[in-house]
Amino acid sequence: MNYQKFSLRTSMSLENDLLKKFDSDPRLRFFSLYLEGRNIADLFSFKLGRQSVFHSVASGSFDGLSLNVNKEYFKVSAYFGGNVPAYNKLELTDQFGKDYVAGTKLNVYPLEGLNLGIGYLQKDFKPEEYSALRLDENNNPYQVIVSRGSTQFKFMTAEVGYSLDKYFSTDLKFDYDVNFARTHKVEFFGTYSQISDLAINFYYNFREPLIRYNSYFTIFNNIENTSEIELGADYKLNKNFTFSGRYGSVNYSDETSQRITLGVFSRYASVSYKKNFGYAGELDAISLSSAYTFFDGLVTPSLSLNYSSYKVSATAPKNDLLAVSTGCNVRPWRILSFDLLGQFVNNRIYKNDYRLFFKINYWFNTNLDVL
Image 1 (cartoon, rainbow, N blue to C red):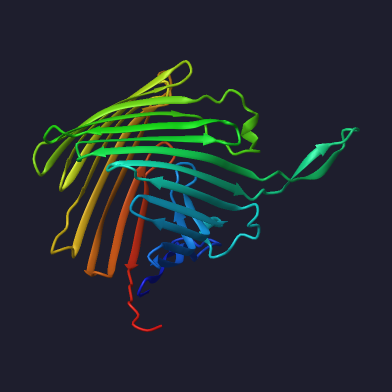
Image 2 (image 1 turned 180 degrees about the vertical axis):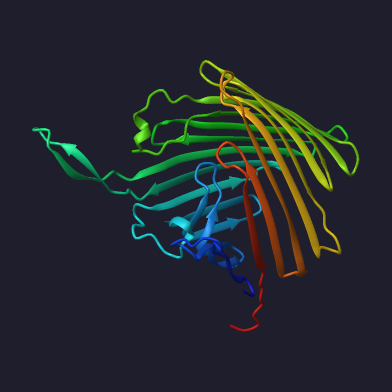
């Protein structure tokens, strides 16, 4: 619902298994439910309620408040709220002091095409108590309640981005783990597209494992960092076909792993092939997907086919996986659509697994003249 600069927005789903009864059926999920105000007093915008946050470390949903001040040469954003409970229940956490996410970010634009940013994020997770058996001095078992400290993320972030007349763009991002006082990730991405119909891409990252503070995994000292590099190109043959190729390599402390990706993309379908080899295992995979709209969007059938053959190491046995999905979207009106999707999976764990999904989508938008 909309009224001038204010809107009430929500996204939810109701799901129920028709063939087998589960204790949780039916399950209502609230993905978002918030009041939004835009450009209030020509100064700031806000969202109050359940909303999403996008961050390289801790993306997800939270129940709280976010503020944005967006001007010509700078942008400031801040948010705080409680973590969303499991299954997106319409409930609030009962420990906001130990179960929350908070962050802020400042972006400045000193020159045309140049973006400089710095930010901070903290996310705490409510500690869960559990019982365990222990032995006393006489080796007699007794039960104790184990209560851990709050596990958390604390990160400083920085970024630099520059683009020049749509021919060249580059982004550099840096994440610093405050808890462990070390660099968590350095990420660089660049694109050069001055040559007609050709884009050349370069990607690099250095990454430390993402571990919560006070987590059990902090006792392990042999968790390794990785560095990754990828070079690729996209060539537009004509308005209907684009060819893509990528080569990447991941470096571990004593090993390496490589991957090759080739693809053809068109308005009606796409085909891609991927091959992995080296320390991370061996993989050959081919994917085909297609979707086309008829009668001005009334009917949109789709098809997806994925086949892969993989081994976790050169000497391990080979496993095959086949996944097929086909469906149809019917949209008689802009606000109402029906989806029917069938899936087939066959692998080492799921033998000839069939599933059928049906979904109704209703999009409503109401402009209120009076409150």
